[in-house]
Image (cartoon, rainbow, N blue to C red; front, side, top):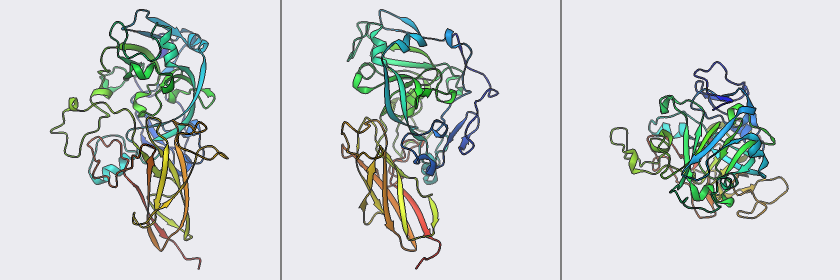
Length: 393
């Protein structure tokens, strides 16, 4: 694509914040410390997790940059950034989460394949851009369309980057056309993050944001949008990011038996304490985040200090000074919810957190029951082991 280049090596990588925990250097994949993650409801750009599959693309000439919008539509077009900026701009507060979040903990039960992640492959940002449904209307595709007259039922997003999994080809993914054309789904072609132009790590100059869905579908460095009859046949849709039962291993896997993962399940994690921690006082603060896909709000976060025998309910909040009510118009439906509780612990304690969303979905109790060979969607109860360092009595 004119104006946007995909390097073949890692000599032109952007600078990153020194506090990030680097899980893979090439391609660069990193996450912030868990305590820093919940220091702000809107995650600072520098502390937002970095998930890449190849070298970071570079913009040579933004004036020449175009995205092609084509496929099973009657009015294919090429759009410049100026064309997209002419459309009404929306700001959508949405949490992105890598499907591999908490993979490292799952791997301790039984080895899995993939980049290791602690609990911080997640972040919340204010994304600014045009709604995809408005862009598609430029091509004659009305809102709330299931199929185009030419048979298009899915919208494919193609990046400019080069991935070894695609044999040097670009990263790509798709969503159903009905989701893409639904204004309430808030799917964006985003050019801003937290009020500033996207930086290179996060998709400059243009990316897709698909709220409530695993981060793998929010394609960065957008090169093309294709209206297609069937879902994208790319590697990351067909041979990755699918949820298999614990009985499937690399000897008997059949990728075609599972659909690509879209919504992420109910999730929560403790961020104020490490997995194994020492505290100086009996009274501890237990805080972290909870999130559920599909725009489902958080109904409750339960905390236990005895491994799950007795529970207390944590306080939930999003914006400072505003009470959080799941599904309320003042709440951000696509964003995470922070929680906080205080408790007094004995000499040692197993502290557990689990969340419930407005549909009644609850996190599974153990990793074993959801273990899968790719280590995705570890949404089991989050447990930390805490020991009192000395008594203040």
